[in-house]
Length: 197
Image (tube, rainbow, N blue to C red; front, side, top):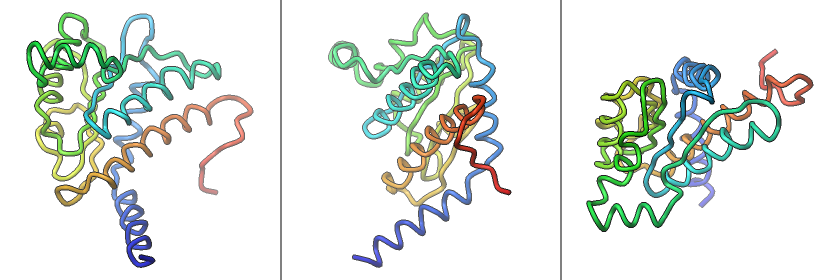
């Protein structure tokens, strides 16, 4: 048991050290410069990634706003269960995000798509539609990145063996808290500064 716990943590640390930091900076820059009165960030994901999408939207859309740090217009498309189930029942699960985005997402908006495999049909359909109207796609992926990694304007990729959902989802959640913490650190008088001396 001890060896497993130790190995998991070592694996997590190793993967974190392999992340492309510039891509994180590029994501932060996009979030920092989006106009909340003009453009919207839409979050999508399935399963554990749906929970991450919801948590991300909460932190970025509400957590920063109530602290007086930043106002970002955020919508999480995983949070309305009646809408998701009606779309699934009526026109198919692959449409649950596309149908919510259709004729709403526009040029200058961001689609934040979270998918460990990068190959979920509903994620890809939404991403392709977003790009077709001039929105940017931020893709959070794992494994080999799948099709989503190729479609993404900015890719946050965790390169793992196929099926390592837990550790990929761990790191996607860390991305949320990293970005959230960055914006908090920019507030005058903030006590938490993760900067190496």
